[in-house]
Structure formats: structure tokens, C-alpha cells
Amino acid sequence: MTTHHDHIQMLRAELTSFHLSRRERQQIERELKEALARQGNVEADRPTPPH
Image (cartoon, rainbow, N blue to C red; front, side, top):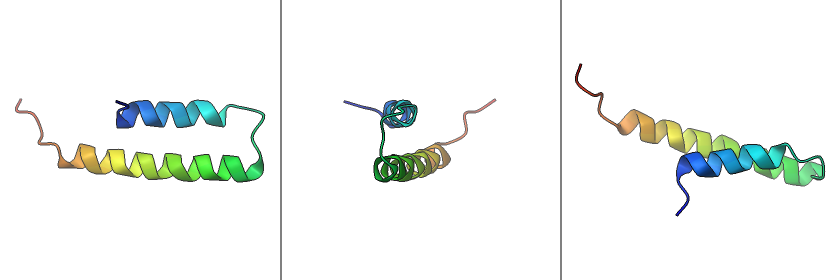
């Protein structure tokens, strides 16, 4: 199973490819933005650990 973090890392790696069409690059960037937003929501829902 792929975690959110793994998915984000895979999308970032795909963006480093020089063989992407403009449409493919835009789609990956959109997916990355959505994944980062979801990760932020998950992080915000976690309780703060006690100090």
C-alpha cells in the first residue's frame, strides 16, 4: 500500500522527467497539489503530542 508521503514523492520524481508533454506535466502538478493539500489536512487532524 502506498502512503500519502510515498505518493507525493513519486509525483515529484515524475516531474523531473524531461519526456513529459505539457498536458502530462500539468496533470502531475495538479495531482501533487491535491496530494499536498490532503497531507496537510491529515497533519492538521493529528493531536499535538504532549511535551
